Length: 112
Length: 115
Image 1: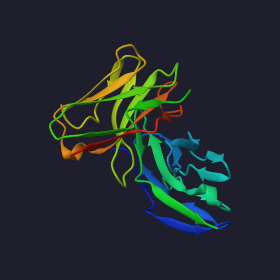
Image 2: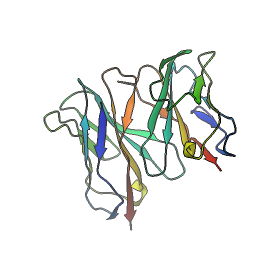
Image 3: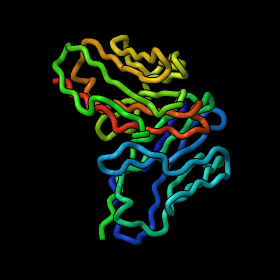
Image 4: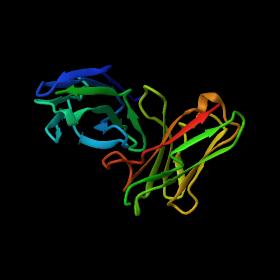
């Protein structure tokens, strides 16, 4: 069945460091791919998405490119800030469009 | 507010009791989802409503779990004869349409603890 595997955490970085959180997926057909973020004390919210191969999603300095050949959707940011500290979830929506499958989450802590 | 509202935010109950969790989605959102999130895990799909009907309930773990959305807006997740393993955060999300291209808007969750 459809599934998402993402890099285990926790990840601790210094401010202005480069961030990569790896995500790979298994899916039937052509899924849509998402990164959701959960800041402390808040609900999950969409960070960025890509709906077809080679699309790049971007938001708040974060980027991820939908790579069909490697079945990946890695999250990157060139210079993290303390305010980026949160848990990041990779997710896909399968070919039916009804279900979202989430990874286990990667906790990021950015220290000044 | 205009977001997804879930009540109660915290519920502590004893093993064997009945529990109801409520979700009030964003006005106008036809799709509503329930997820369960255990500690250190990602959200696990339970059930999806399109309007009043449960379009996909394949994620409900057993027949102790049931959900309704009688008027196509507010939804209630019902858990009978609760077990300690049911302890988790139950998340509700809504969307304008089917999720494939739409964005899920999540509530802050209802934390259930079964003693």
